[in-house]
Image (cartoon, rainbow, N blue to C red; front, side, top):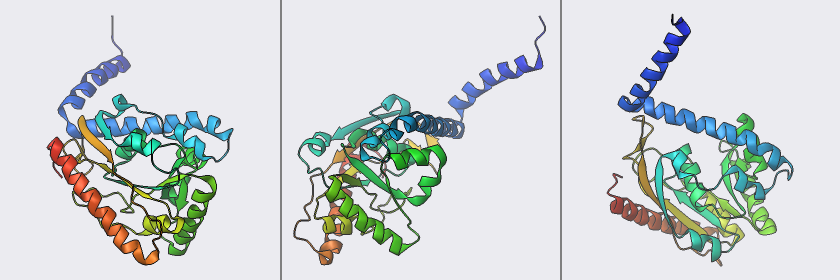
Length: 270
């Protein structure tokens, strides 16, 4: 039986792709990132009709950020303190995560600890990313324009009022941007001003180092293990804007100590 060109190409594809996946770390990285992006797009398409029934609503976040699915992310994650986050922490609070520096690990980390009625603050550009942006908007994500300080301050002020009025938690990345280096960048003070303005506690959340199995710069994404820890809440009751710098430093130091401890336990490079 004669084999057509198309069949030869299919055979070549089925042979070459698995070999490249096993032998090339770069090829494996792009395969996994391609799967991740396809998964997020597929998920957004699925949840939009369901979320649209409620309109823009914080309750939709549990659909936009699904439950645990470690098998999809090639990660073994251990979480400490998530029960405390869900049971003993006031519903209105500011969650400050550290080391969720890649889109994959942001999503995976949020799956592990995201409590009810919690929405992230994200850059405004995300809102224009097609179906993903629409799903995020329906999930109640708070968008800010980082290039316009006045707009960002106004959004933060509105967020404080929304937190108190609608009884929600807010998830804010303290470094303001993803940091792929091994060091902790200085924290932006916007989240802490928000916490003080609303007089709600700050809840630090730390993920251990993942540099031994994930590196965007080196195009490496293998299987790995990491730990997520929810630290005790830090009260802001009675604090004023003058106390924000000290509060920022105190939270950063606590998170740095926790990060070094978690990474040391796993023997992961920092």
